[in-house]
Image (cartoon, rainbow, N blue to C red; front, side):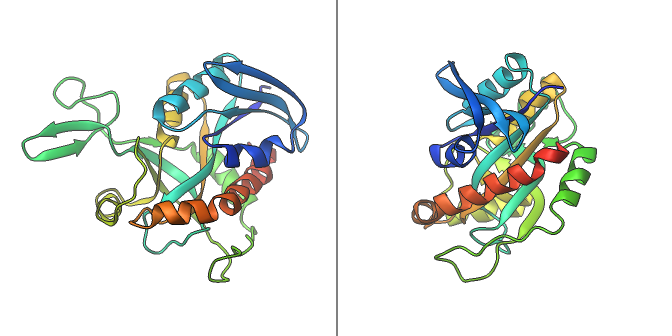
Length: 248
């Protein structure tokens, strides 16, 4: 049975997992660093992929083809879109959509399934859904999870949420865009890699999982919140990943 592949975009996300890896074997490929070893007794390969959809797709392909990973998981941070969510909450993707893929007409931009166009390669549906059996195991494993409040937060314990995660090659720092993405697509969170990883996994027939802790609320102050909370919420995501390893 192959290892679990875990992708991270930035150093803070990667460090909390890599620091606990036993007997890591480190290699580089395509400008990315891969750490293969055991995490809590489970064989894993950690990939520090870098930010953005192309990097995520490259890393996912290498984890599957080069390292023989049987399931991929993205662990990291995201911006919140759902106004009911707060910084520190964790979103696990039930499905993922690339919100910046589509076509432009005189009426404006229309999101469409990545890799398709309605007048050339029509496709029914939007995005990729997580494997149902895998999600059942995830929900069971996290049913009694309690997260610690953020040091600079309201004092409330962060909540776990299952929903849609949006992906695009942009850091969302706009209340207008945040509101539109939530209104039009029902996205709980927005980030820069998950749906691209899922697209690569879909091509190879490999299940995937996206775990995102909210470092900001994707509005006009998101760049400040991102810096303030990145370390704590990255740790939350990493702890959840470690809890899930036995059921992946």
